[in-house]
Length: 146
Ligand code: CMP
Image (cartoon, rainbow, N blue to C red; front, side, top):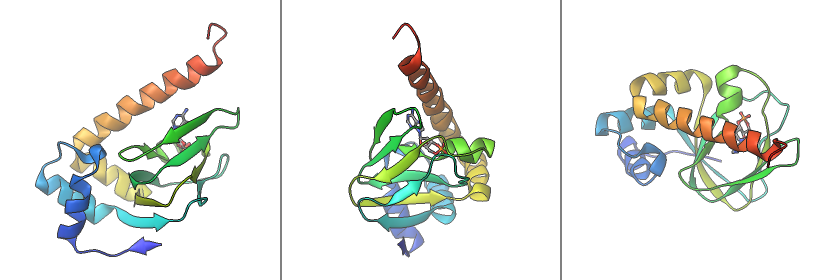
């Protein structure tokens, strides 16, 4: 369910989310303009493996579980994000993601995502670093040496 807040209230919310740490007040204002805040109930499916999806989700409160088609499960919590893979390469979602508790999320659409990276380079770094870690973990999970 989308929520509507004033820009300054939304900025105060963003200041509590680790994902946005280190952003200037101006950058936080840009994020507030580009991201929609939503609340979902436990059990809500937020992404489906194989489907097209063009949004990035940043978790403000609550937890989610990502399940890959090969059976790997990953817990995601406040300050973490998901949905970047399909958004960046335009391909299908690599995992199904469901809320395991009630959640509050920020949702960033495709056009807004690229605008956000240009406005707030620390976010681009954070996403690249996490993507690299996810790639290593996914690879290690299925390597013959693990
Ligand atoms: P995307 O493929 O767009 O949609 C599903 C999301 O689940 C994916 O982006 C990632 O954000 C997340 N995801 C997929 N695999 C993993 C993983 N191994 N570790 C953490 N998150 C993942």
